Amino acid sequence: MTQINQGRTARTRIGLRTGLAAMGLAAAMVGQAPADSDDKVRLVVAGSDGISSATPLFVAEVLGYFEEAGLEVEYLTMAGGAATMSAAIARGDVQIGLGAASQYMGSIANGLTKGKLIGEFTDNNYVILGGDGISDPSQLRGKRYGISSHNAGDHIYSMAVLEAYGIGPDDVEWVPLGSPPSRLSALVSGKVDGIEMTLTSLPEREAGRIIVSAEESPVPFVSAAIFASQDLIDGNKEALTRFLGAIGRGADWIRANPEEAVASCVKSGSSEGRCRDTIRVGTGPGNGYTWSSTARLNVSAISAMMPSLVAATPKAEGMSIDDYVDATVAPSEG
Image 1 (cartoon, helix red, strand yellow):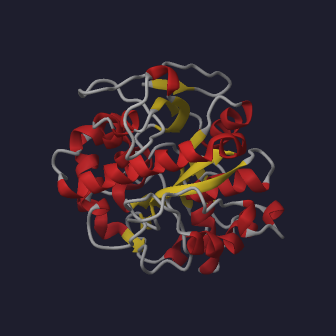
Image 2: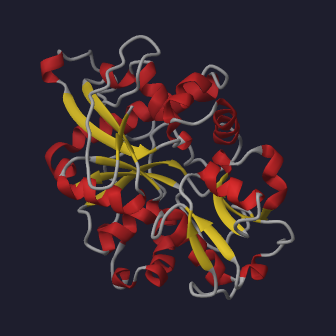
């Protein structure tokens, strides 16, 4: 799997046809016969290491859904947080980005990237966890709070939630820690007093640390979204529709085969244990947008997120839903 570090881009084409070899991406032409390799649409997709919420994508690759759809895909693992992803998209190194919707909304508002949110993997499955002795979010005032990176999705979400509890962005110390396992380890060891995590990343044994659940959250959110560059949307929206359709097929397969899906999830860089937790949450009862059959975007939730985004990103003031979303890309249901 290719890694991109800050300031440098490395690419490797990763193909996967029939076996459980290395992982890659391809845009899909669902319901049509496979195209010759020369006719396939090439897509470059990037996500963070350990993005287990994107398991339907990895399953779609393993099962050949992208190839059946006539796509050739290159997947890049991105290091360096939101800033590195925005820079890679702006340079044209990446066409499709995976991650928190708020991260891409912030990049759009700040003029760092041109494109739209077109789909999602998981709806709001963010939870706030407290360290030892922290049982209410109001206790986090003056404490250390772990985030993946500044202005990343978990940072924006956490600022919005704490603001709802009367805690301003300057009332806590924000500590960049990277991946969810790193943030959880810092919380358990007492290095920080609070973090955000997705339920798909949270081990069952740590569920007792939840102090704000997804259901109780005062802030609606799309946790793991799919962003496409404007050039790709304008140049080949049909390929993107097929891409989302293949991901939807992957989600349907996971629901029918949760145990077999673990091997594909591990290709995200997640551990087997974390993958089992992810699949348990992703296939459980809940929001119909999580791992849906079409990977469609919850536009209502994006609209509801916009006021919270303004608090973290002042340049978002006055922007409309059409600045952030293209709801015409996802395939129709049925």
